[in-house]
Length: 205
Image 1 (spheres, rainbow, N blue to C red):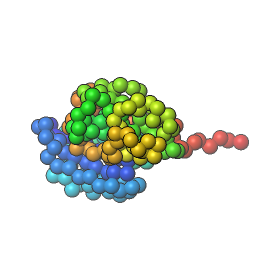
Image 2: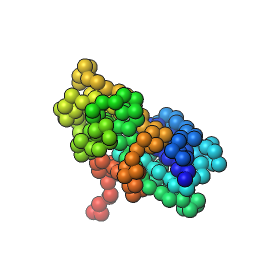
Image 3: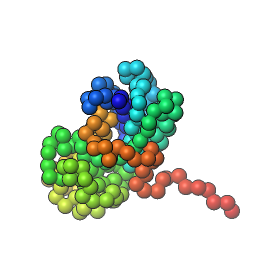
Image 4: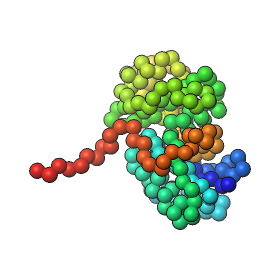
């Protein structure tokens, strides 16, 4: 089975093709807020235009806009190709890549969350959660870190509070989905916001 992985939850935009337990093609670029413009051409640049039997898409948490762009593209391609579709979370994706880079007993993923907060969740080396996902101010995140190594694109907030921490700056990469166990790649392809969206419905007066 060939699997297309789509990841758009941060300033990075990445895609990967996985087949027979190996990554056969990948693309990764830091696009800021340009996911809508870059994602489809990036997929089209993969072998066979990225066509796959199954599509995995990052559902967040992360950038509201980026997550929605990725899910919309995944749903459209799944419909057009008659492919299966499922989701995964950005947090264990980053954790898996972090453990592959350097094995530790556990690590906390710390991602930019907006409004001066970070998304945070701790994982054991087998990617089982050691804590629930939370959105915290940096000071609270530092306290919750409890001496763990931290990895993600939000670690700068912790570095500003304590320069002696074990921190690794990292963006998610679609190719790391090959490291995720099956139970972590079977989510509904719907956004995981982590906190309330910025946009609020208008109230009739």
